[in-house]
Length: 492
Image 1: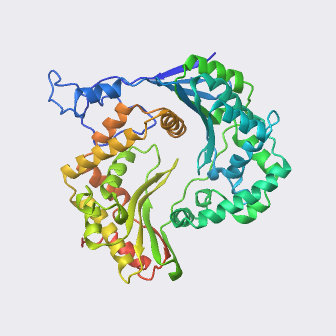
Image 2: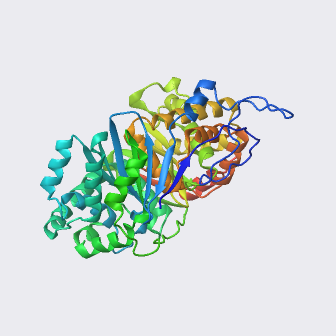
Image 3: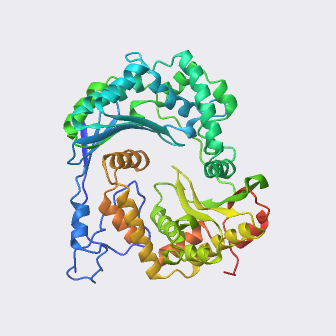
């Protein structure tokens, strides 16, 4: 018998919170609707009644667990289209030195035909529906999804079920795909931003699978076999590790029936496969190549996991650090103090802050591109570390409120359309075990105060060991001892 759970969010009051509970559990007592009898009034945490009502009146995410453990999650949106996909709790993090790259390789290969459809038949069927079929692999997730008309959800789910359960894995296709992935690796190597972040993971998580490149090393790609692919499928494509997510013109009860029809026959062959813990190591890697002409530099500290209650406070801090690109202009009007400072000093060409999270760890920092000048890299690093110290010591309430408003706008804009909502449902179900209502997200962000920001900056950033990667014309990159000392320097 199916067990159906509805994630509703009730309107209740905000109590004083110095530290929010973890994100895997719903927060009660977040929304305030006015003065409470016999108690001190609490200021409303939302800007208007209409905004509050709009968040509370969004259709709930309905979740049903099939008998085999597969979870069906959906949100109804009144639109003639729908997006549905499979979010699988598997990725690079579950690989080893021998098979690193297998998750990404398999993502490529499932579209090359199944036991029921040739590659040509698969492509023709998708095109004739006017649908879009795609996939991606990350360090902790593998995703296959389809965007289609709402009337074609059954056919699209049949295709997703077919490529997941019946991939042909033809030897000829495997050999051809090796050349495709090797060319993809060459293309990725020309994207220095991706190269920087791969190196950042490789030294921050030395000796753990989080250090692996998603595409894998060249040797592994060349020696990939059908048995390795089948072994990965057997271990990781288990129904209790899969979330079927959908958004758009879909009825949840009908979706559950279709899921039972197409996925009900899947059976788990074993328990959940464990992953190695992420072990952070502060370190520096400097690959100088003046022929590149620019210096690409990233500096970060260990952040939080997805479920850590400090996640949103660090997201607010990340928004305060901001981003800037000389090509886009508008330096004087940037809300970030650091962005205005970068504009005034003309260095670097661009920068952005980032907050990358995983199941048990994360990386919080900034990445910049500097011109080939003697002091450009040093000025960039000094400016970033100086801003981090400022956030720890003297950030104003007005700045924090502005950053919270910007963060909420960004998060809401990322839930625009069926594909974005489907992605949000799948990702949150994998990371939190639930879909966090927008009203709760708004309340968690609004609960961040300057005092909370000071605490998290002190706990995660101030006087912590950084991880630093430099690539290109990096002559001016300071040595690690100086960088470590500047994490707690009294000078701004």
